[in-house]
Image (cartoon, rainbow, N blue to C red; front, side, top):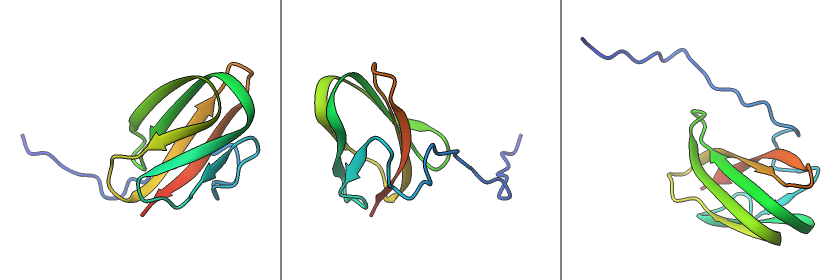
Length: 101
């Protein structure tokens, strides 16, 4: 059985902001990045869950943080556009566009 690739399919991710990298709650920097970046959470947060999703919709990184006001994330994947989803136990949740050059 031959494997076929659908070249007409596209992926869309509904961001909670405008997907420009600007954020309501959190600030990623530097963005664009070359490998690692930080996210300023604005204040001390507890039980932080971060997941990084590639442009195909596949989760490529899942990380838990205990208590922090700034978290550091390393993208060990090719250059491209990624979506970072962060949730906290305080109820804050946001999806941000991250560009890796």
